[in-house]
Image: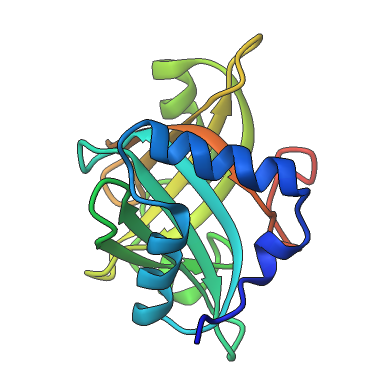
Length: 184
């Protein structure tokens, strides 16, 4: 029996079909394969999916965000060519979250400056991530004028170095409490 995917049920059929066909046209597994892989690793509600054409894995990636029964958010990276989950992180509510702040030495403002100095653009969103080894990082989404894609720049909250760069092609869903530049 297939588990329901609430996120996709609310979308127009044409958008879901376009997304599904786009993935298969580029030699990737269907989105459903990665959603099932993610649900096998972490149970909960899927709140957002992003397609990254360039990723640290060197392959197209689905970034899947799941909120579990305790309201904790998880970010799972799924290789869009194989359907395998290759990274699992948790999200902190803010840079003041104890698990994030315990070892962070770099401020959010400094992390944003580092990302913008290197890639330009306007801040769309900032997420506070805790890597599987417990280290904190800022994930900063930057939009470029006239482009439909966003750079996702991950800045290590301890060293201030850029540790990952991805290019987001599309996003389905949005977290209700998403921390956007408009709210800051």
